[in-house]
Length: 195
Ligand code: ZN
Image (cartoon, rainbow, N blue to C red; front, top):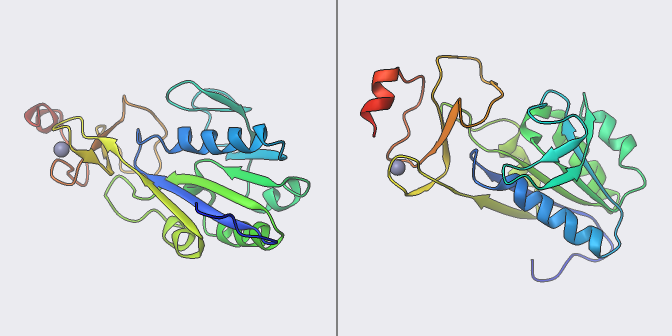
């Protein structure tokens, strides 16, 4: 960011696949704001309880306190007294999160969101496309393809489950590049075949 906007808020989107370091980047920005004595608050959807209820813990184990919320609209009220509002796993909040981010930015807040931009089929993960359109700043993080080592922007599901949302870590998913990604469900034999 060359120069922060004056007398207005704005939206920053950090997107990418799993294992790309999106949450680490969100935490880094929040920490820097905190060191600058700005009032920060971090939200996450309650459904994501992989590690803990009241903290966001990135894959590299860095921790920041987070408020778990059930619905996007709650964030408008809870963020009232803060300058910098972070939202992790933003793709799980559904379409109403776009309006919430716009509202907060229009109220003068710096809004930083992090989320998956593609689902396990490689399709755009709503509401990320809309968030990317209304954001002032966009960062796409890349992981490393576990098959070939290329920069990876996709998330391969390696269990037999067709729900769009299946919460899990590297036991269910791996980072893959365009060349190695296969949309859909892989059989065990197909997975072994890839290595
Ligand atoms: Zn690859």
